[in-house]
Image (cartoon, rainbow, N blue to C red; front, top):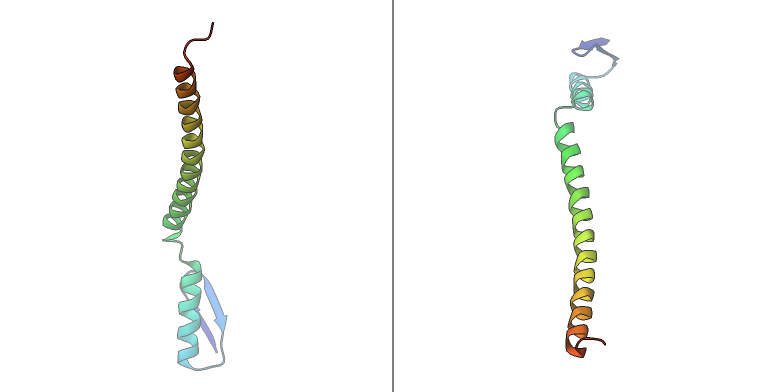
Length: 80
């Protein structure tokens, strides 16, 4: 028995109607690319967030070191 569906799909099944419908549904889901863009944007957003958190941590360390250095210089007074 040969079943033909949209998207130029042709499958050869020798089973029941349930098998044909399951195969058709699986093939339709496999060919569906509607949500692909959303997933790509979500992955890109996650990457940007991870990079931002990492950069924020490094920036915090740098600022803390500069404040400590400035505080030390201020408390020691002007060097002559």
